[in-house]
Length: 252
Image (cartoon, rainbow, N blue to C red; front, side, top):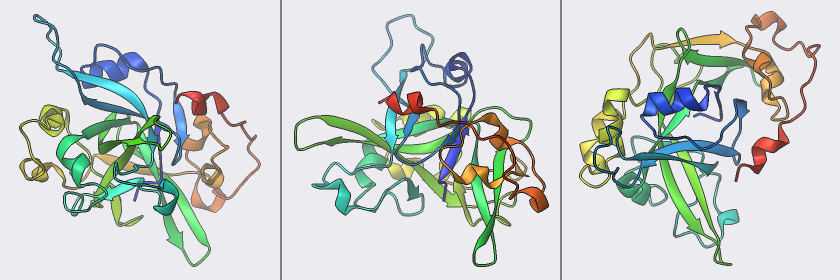
């Protein structure tokens, strides 16, 4: 699964990577957790004649997909991930897979390796050399009983590749830039037409860096969470604590 991730690229870097005319205001986020705002890229309205950019736009959504048919979201589990192997058939994700596929900009994600019953070692998993990756995502707009709407999203996951398998058996699906257009094209590309994109990324794309267990707490949000901490020291809590970035929760 993917339960935490980060994006520390600038808006200009995100715009360039995804060929966007502009990007929603989104500060660097080093410990994004479920129910918090995340940035999505989706297909948009056709560009004006003469534009050399594809028809894409960015928006902020709540991480945790709520199916459009849900009557009471509290009765559902928090759907932060969708299994790529079954999403096209599952009632919760079927409509989004057909009509609302998305890209989720990320600098990497966190995963935990179990060591016994009660201990786990967190890892910061990022592209080797840094940079931006695009997780395959799904979007759904939920209409609340009062009439207001909330945009929500989930990350598609697949079997872990050799870079990650020793830590966890699942990882996010990564869409390559050359496949952005096909993945986002829900008008002509049905789920079966893009099923080949839902594979583990090639081995060697990611590196796994052991980090402090301070990442376990959502209130810890600083870049020091990504610093290498050897496993013997990973439980050291002597580092100064950083206050929660409350302003990031006001993005929606």
